[in-house]
Image (cartoon, rainbow, N blue to C red):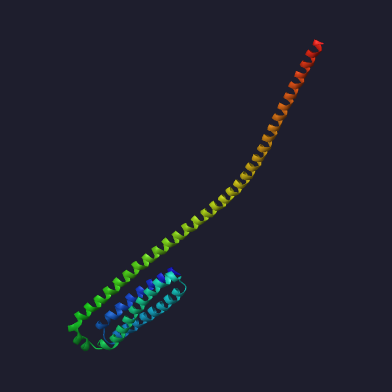
Length: 224
């Protein structure tokens, strides 16, 4: 929808230049030529009004961020349109309808030409500023879109890392269980080894006692 608004801006700029040229040329025309030029200028202004209406429709479909900048431009365009419309209405009465009347105004024509030139330059400067502002807004929107895309990628990576960490945590729980089980098994084996050693020592003591008893009995019998 921003692209549509930009196209309408281009139409407005061209229509404004066409209307401005005709309005500025009114002092140079008389009679039917002047009436024809007024009709053409009025037709241009009607086209500008239609373009402004289309801009308002386009703005309604924009996001809040885009709408603020576009409304500011639209107010400036409407002001330009009003100035041209007022000047055309003044021109219908002010500018001469006959060659004689025109000649009477030629002495002050250079002042009018200078004023028209200043207004034209002002309009061109305003249009250039608006174009620069529009380019800046477009760059900001592109940067915002790129930043949002990068943010989404980072979130996806973080989500993947979270799943990996959750899997690692589950594996650690399993390892802890295996370690506990192994520790218990080692404790049981250690107790069994101690028990076996005690039994072995006891058997050795019993064997030594039996051997000593046998030796004693053998020696006792020999004495008899």
